[in-house]
Image 1 (cartoon, rainbow, N blue to C red):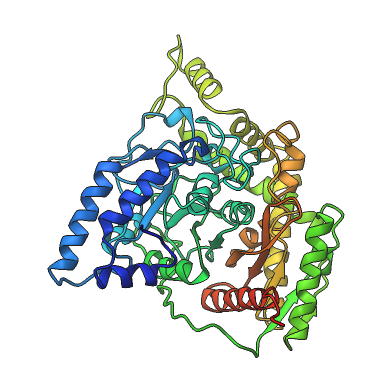
Image 2: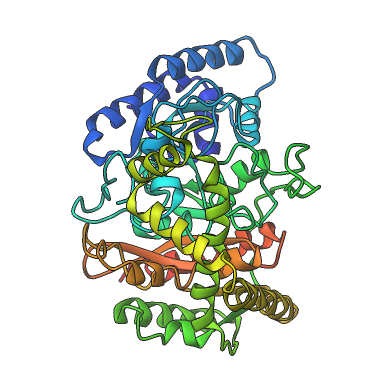
Length: 481
């Protein structure tokens, strides 16, 4: 029976004739069908994926050069454009919209022989922390179906968690890859802003959005990042140098910092706090240099983030007006048509964020809100640059809690916003961050740790993250007597 452990192991099986791409695609299609109740996939490209697999098997048999992601089965969050396939952003307003071009990241996956298996459910327009805001129903956490998978990339996280695909691409505007990865016990990587082209990614907040990666391992995330990163003529914010990944876990000689205020925050689950503090102590026992860093801006980052992102969302989503494309609600005049279309086809959370953004952008409030939030962002950028002259990485929690129950926070948007307290920092500053699965809560749910590094320093980030996972694995091995 087919099983997947890592990209390298899988490709070794392919080359040795012990597996085929067709076997792999059939395995995942069967898993998706058996786990349809999880609602992770909105659409499965069954025939197309099987045809692609057959082509790749023939290519390998012919002895042709193979791509770096040869045969790797990948799911796409429903905000990443895949030409001639539906692209709805989890919204009724784009329910029947078909993408007219490929995202740059998708082109690069296909060029390296990947197989796109389907379109994954998400919070509408990537706005949410629980995947309860999709117009197409909740995604369920595979570890406990009564709990959320996190958001907004919940379907993408569950895709990897439940073995429905090998890799998923999601998007991370304020933690939408790292938080669901944490809730689902998988690796979630948010690259530096500009590392991966945003061309073909439906915009929520353009100065924050970044395509991210869900994987079973740090190494697999690095392999995929190398493929999709680099300069892009269609995105002026994409950095010039492609990321070169080589697997070389660090052994020592690096410095780790942490903010005590994040581990002592009253909103952090006591068991999560105690477990992570114990892990920090174990790092010192391993001989690592771990230092406390005073940070007095924690209470400002969530308000600054939501002021700036909702303002950008208000502008970005103005194009969905019932006139150009997408759903339309007929009316007697132009203004009424725009009003009725947006009222009927946008969900409540999207409406809430558009209204917040429009408010802070309005005359008389721009200076009081936008300018102050921009000041906070600039201070954070200056502070993080200084911090990374003293340490190589920062560790902190991913989320204040493990995956919460469906409906638990639906009627409290403030509590939902505050759940992003540990993840939005990396988006405000544009630095890379990764969520790594390390622990298990007494409630049975997974949780892990977040690692951040300086801008464009993904190689150090991945190496340190892998090392921390190895330390945790060794510390939890049973002692033989």
